[in-house]
Image 1 (cartoon, rainbow over the protein chains, first blue to last red):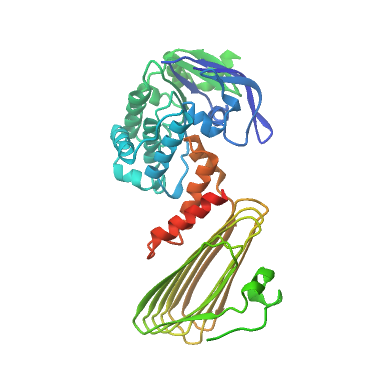
Image 2: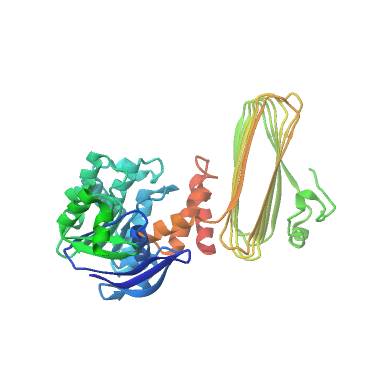
Length: 250
Length: 245
């Protein structure tokens, strides 16, 4: 589904990703872990096409398309979802209006019929319920006045509504209390656990992985994947720390 | 009826950023006088969406405890000037919510003079300007608080959004206060659309024009929230927005 080959990227002319390769097949859940400054968020933003994240080399194939050639909205229509570490507040624009337009823009991009108001609300209510989020919150301006945990749950509601093929979730677990962590974890499983979907979890900690069991765990350090393994690698990292594992790999 | 006869020049502060060539075609401006009697409430919506030059001057006199709610949308004229004078007696309340949208070589301006003449009068002005192309958008706003007009509360919130670097926004809020107990808050900002917000919206599948439109719609809505005729004002603004983007 996603094939990243030797990707290099700069932010403000500084090399951050330095030859990163990763293949994700349908049905798989991958976790990328790593110390601060390893390039984890840069990987997410680069794959999402954020301006300012300049690809300097390598290739990314997403379901047979050259991902790097696509604009951010085209990547979304192709089935990519980027869960933000810091979801952006947009005063004056309601979630409901924004998400309906977004869902229909994606459908249009794929040559599908738009959702009617009623169809959309039904879908939104179902996905909000999955994340135990009150529908009234989705009538409020995007992320404005939401707590850290509410923002992350709202990200997952968006993911549910937009129904992507591949979700890249950047530190979805940061800022969550124990209950919210479980709700988000279960939400990810309900929405994305499927033979034709895949997830890339970007995280510092093992704790989200208690709820969303990864098939593969990778350690990112200094812009590269330095070690890959199964779920036990995350447990080892938690126990021994990044430094020991990164040094051993070097 | 009050008619000003001589065409202003660039030296005239109130016309400093005007399109004088266009102004000539509609000169002289006939002042539209509005008197709101003591304790009365009135509203007015000015919507200018035609392509020709427009210059209007509205002078409102508010009696004791009177309320006047004025909304202005300038979205279309090659030259659009709306000048508003408001004089407030004791306990009067004046609201101006205005949005102006321009593109190409258009020039739009809102010029206000709000005079607090009595005790405890309140005024709120919200002006939102969206400028594309080589357009010029101006807000000149003078607030005068006369001697003895204590308890005055005067607010100005003025923001302009430049969609292209070639557009120009001018904003000049002015305060002239001769009373002691006065609250006068003004905020003035010229900016561009938040790049982070745009990326967030686009990452969900909105095309760049859709994302911009949504953010600008919210920006303009601040001028019309809760107003009489809010829906008509907003949909007229939206139509123009779509043409500009």
